[in-house]
Image (cartoon, rainbow, N blue to C red):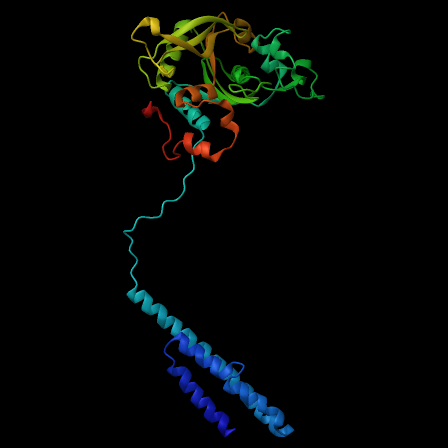
Length: 370
């Protein structure tokens, strides 16, 4: 027992004298390891008589626990000492630049929609929304489409199962909307429930048609604009559209041309063309040609004065109120403005394409950037 007490004193002194974690760990292995001094003493218990084995074994177990606790205590003290030294001597250079974090890109469609919201918001238009799944009345009948119009055929429109709970056949017939003009109908109907014109709204959304090639996809985005009030004329439409295309393409002298055209929901109707020229390599440049003979035109959107039947269908008296409307494919405008050659790439989810054609998410459009 005297030897055990002497060993405790000796080991305690060694542990206390250890001045770093490596020295302390060496002592732990020397004392408590498989070939350690206390482990070696434990192995001698088998040669002792029962009474001596009992007494010595208890003493060795107590010694083992005390030495283990002392090592842990010294380890904590050394770690604290090491941390204090690091806090005293180490210096963080806060002047270093941070590592650049990867930044995503805004999809060109989202960018174009925000640009359009900025432009028309500055003109006083408000954004309206409507459902992707429409009924025949809102999508066709209310917009003055005749019963035999090609757009009502299965090969052009994605029709859905009829709603069995709807008694009106035109409202029971469901489909994926073929244009966002149905949002105009909903907005006019809702407005007339509680108030009267003026109505000044713009809407954006997905539309669906059974078509797929380099310039058409089964799903695409449209923009629709509507203004209804007393005394609205074709001159207001022309002024609004001319200001819009020049602001969108950032060309103050962009030539704009209106051509008569037919749409069921407007009368009169007009296609809107913008001017461009071609260089020697066939490249397109928007703007006016120096020589009028070199001036070329491309169709950009359809427009017109809201048909009296459409106003009547929405509860608006066409003898008191008039309005204009126009619509545009957002993909087409985006391709033209940013030089994107293939419509299908908008929906292929290719990150490399988005990195090339995408926009900085920290630089959003606003009216001041027009």
